[in-house]
Image (tube, rainbow, N blue to C red; front, top):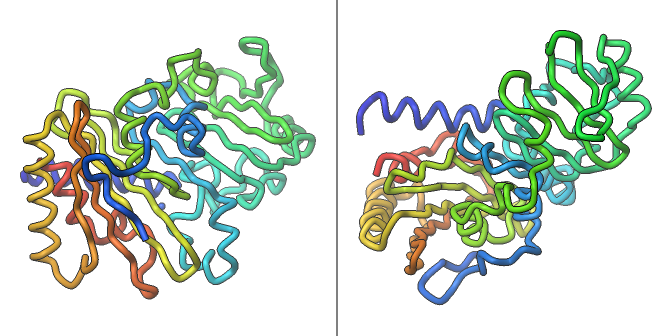
Length: 305
């Protein structure tokens, strides 16, 4: 892989993190059903438009599930347990001052251009703070919207149980109110990847690349307890030959880097939309999210195919 390719891959992974930070394989005839419309991950992907997945990384987080792991779990899961949006930067109180805190967010879907959070929010306090910081109330598509004059700052929609936002110059507010059939969940590659990841508390998707051998790759996090985490790396590829080649490459990396990925398993699901799935168990002393923070070999093998 060229230096430029490695740099672009690591850059995309870093953006996904900074704009924050017992699994079976998908062999033929096994794995989760990608058409399961009731999965929390697909429900989250349904809140943002399909165009969001082509312009940059996408992150889904079930923050409530991470909080449920307890104080020890929150420390261990700190790198992957926060919404990925820079709007919740710990060093900047944002336009809502102290009226919005991370522990009010239950689920979050964030992209480069827009995001949607669900939880329990102090809507009155937040909107009062927005007003004090120069935001004005308006209306777009029949929804109350808060913006700053001349398009500066994010555009926000706030209620007691949801917050939606878009970044100026990148997306209209329709990005967080997609029409029927136009969300990320309606893109077949995302549906396949979501089905492969299964029941995860976090999923990080690389941008969709429909013209390349690997159409879409995603890394999911699963935790049965504060001390047990499994990372699931899924790749939707163009054909079965690509799936076999990628699976062989991933197995080679696992062997060569032993004991870094000991216990990892690579499986292939054949069909019209082949999948390659790699599960990597984390030991208690390894921080969840390491496959995109420090141990990048498997991500690079997928992106460099």
